[in-house]
Image 1 (tube, rainbow, N blue to C red):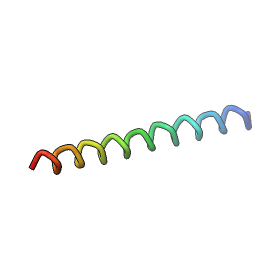
Image 2: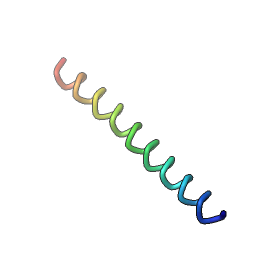
Image 3: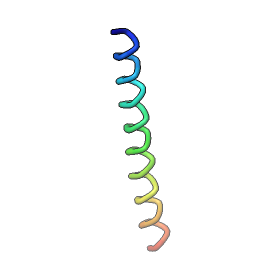
Image 4: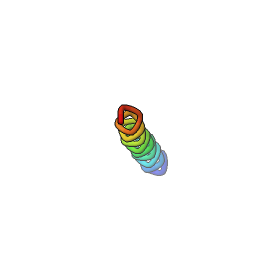
Length: 34
């Protein structure tokens, strides 16, 4: 069970990081266009 929880936390962390990076990239792209 510990391994399963760790895997879930790792996947959630990766998704969260990608989500933040994606938003930051979009904002940077829009700001650069302006």
